[in-house]
Length: 229
Image (cartoon, rainbow, N blue to C red; front, side, top):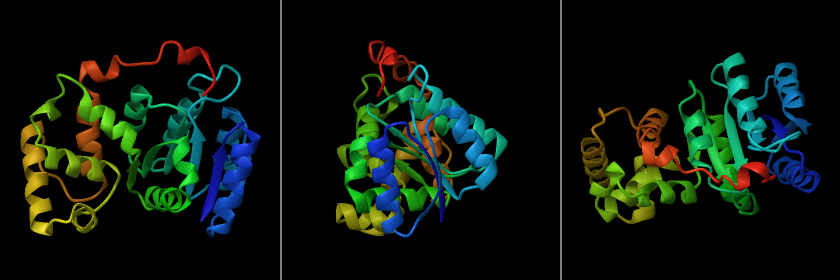
């Protein structure tokens, strides 16, 4: 599986190269800025990409903008974004882009090698991998429609957002498949969403709906926008 990485931090990019190579991935290219990343995607046509949200020269949103441009140029390109902090607007931008596997993980998640490689494979296969911390912040927003969800429904929503299927959710929460199916139905009903299939699209539907709420998109880190992640 060919991977293109966009990461200017040498220690992190070297670590990613090493751990992914050991896990059976092939690192096709490592770019340190947005133009280099876009060129590498065009040259190598990777199976999945890993992109830091913030890249030179301003270390604001160059990475996510490059990822979105790459997906426009290569529809369905799987993208896993890494960030130091939970940036809800960036997550919303990525989720609302067309088609293909998407992921948004905090950089701390990389140290959990098995979880990280599983998430990368899930994204490469067209699935979704959202960091639990991102989901937790969405769940906790006052005024969000998910305030109407029960604690168990919130747990199911969080597992859905991480890209897990019904069987995996049932195993993780120690409940039956039928119970998971019922909870998902309740979630969609309470959020005013049409019931979709059990794959990638249902996760995008839920998270895009939640991110569309004004109170979610208004939350940015003004101080962090001027600093490197």
